[in-house]
Image (cartoon, rainbow, N blue to C red; front, side, top):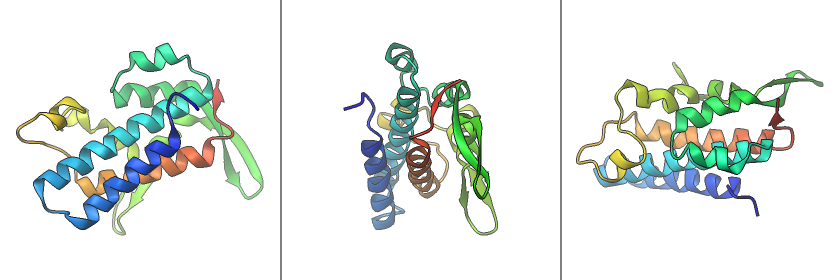
Length: 162
């Protein structure tokens, strides 16, 4: 079994969505959704890096820093379909551009991960222990965690270090 399990990350995202759907306005439920979503992001990114061949000790050094883990994907590449039947190698950091479609607006996953730079509660400690959590919408995070895990699964076979 790999050190970081993508199926586990996907299940965390799924649970975050279930909690969000059942009690979207309860503070403690939103806190659980935020925590599970960010934990799912962490494990998804670490699983991708591990699959690509990044040494485990380097992955562990990143601890819970989602932004650094996402930046590390710049050193990896995946094959993406550019036109039907045509695939090209691209930076695995293109996961940043995967978007949550809200109808009138589209929110990239990368913006949600980078939100810690814009004043949201620092994952994990300020979410676990903070008195008041400042965060982007928990429903967005839960949806993004599902999409990140799906993207990882879809690109699992081709991810590699550059």
